[in-house]
Length: 145
Image (cartoon, rainbow, N blue to C red; front, side, top):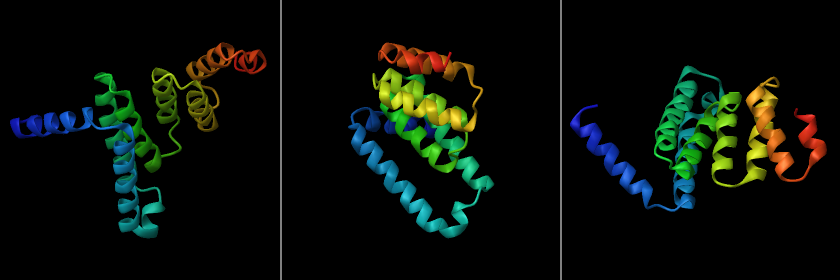
């Protein structure tokens, strides 16, 4: 990473760290809408560009996770899911992020979405069982063991 890229990243990080989550989510949503409108119907197809966009958002989310900026990571990961909703690991990480943000219902929803795309996911099954157990829902907890 050259000096200009490093400085640009620091500026972006500084801007994001003081920004409320709803602003980040709104900006991400607007960017997605604009990108989708400019792509037209062709943008709905699975293309290398969509896969690349999904992974670009994913890598940005990883950077935010490493810095414990979970709300920003979640907003970026939501963008990755928009471009590639069928990738189970994106949903798994979303579930983990929701857990870090102490939102167990959202974590459960993300983990259950993950299982739609990859039904045999031991880590997700274990997390779901624990979340349901913590919520006192023993029947659902047992079903994921």
